Length: 214
Image (cartoon, rainbow, N blue to C red):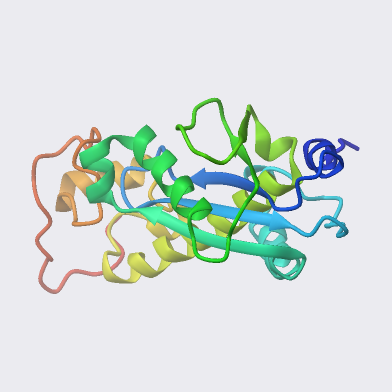
């Protein structure tokens, strides 16, 4: 089994006690926020050995890990950048900003950041970017799970308001059903206008339309 504590153990041995793992979800989506989570695992805790990249876990498994992650953390937080911020900044900068928001939350006080990916921004807090970090660091994996569950639930709730794009299953990612909804009904206030939506039409709620649009 892959050693998921390698980065944390090295940092704990070096004296860092509040190591925050950072990850985001939703970069490739056509709509909804990009959501980041920050998790500071208790140095003496051991999480479920099956914890890994949230994309490799079933929805049921991800949800079963949420309470454990939160209870075995010194601190955790979920932050996001809205579609408007994404359109203004671009998706990379918005993703980094969402992660920065996590590190700056009151009570977080991280002394080291483990960041998923290969890009971050200048900060007074020492940090390390870890490529495929959610598959190699328990803190980053934990953050990916919290962010994924939060964002999925948000998109499922938004589906109740806009049941024309398949968000209850695609959670905003580009799928045939999503593009079909955009073609038929236009883009909503939750869509990222700077992304290729394949439509210039703004959403107008149809009258007396069945939820089943297929």
